[in-house]
Image (cartoon, rainbow, N blue to C red):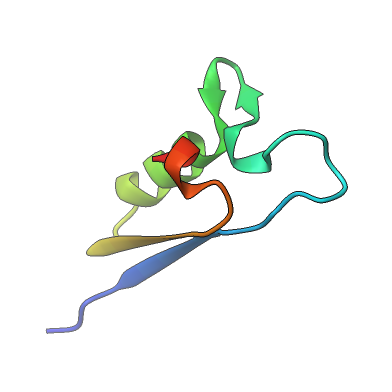
Length: 59
């Protein structure tokens, strides 16, 4: 049996944007919430989120 994994890369620093892109709100949800929710709703067996810059704020 194969396991299908998805990786969400959310470790960027957002140097050109004044706010953290992962925490940018779109229709009341953060961008990272939307992406992770969509990944979980898909047929993936596991979703791995890679965090870096400001990981404490994103958790």
